[in-house]
Length: 136
Figure: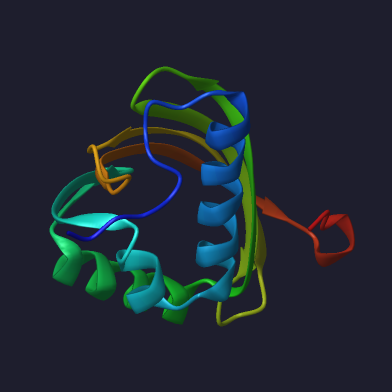
């Protein structure tokens, strides 16, 4: 059976570890690597888009990182329960025209017993910034 450590139920240490592992994977900008943290039939809401299953995750992230260049992400544990974690995050990227953005948001994650994320709900806002104002 496929597992992704650490497994629920989470405590502060394991929830923090799960958040760092997610940050590291997303910063790799490798859609296949990222997708392995999710169940085969994972359900996402990302802004107003709905993504279902690992194959759609890979397609979604591939498209995302073709548009969001110079991507750098920071996640922070906000809260956790037995099999759920909430994070706040910010990331920066630029578009093909060189305009930089900082995206802010919150994610709610739900994991199965094998430590794979079965649900991910993300609310995200983008702010145009000047390159000199980058923090990440």
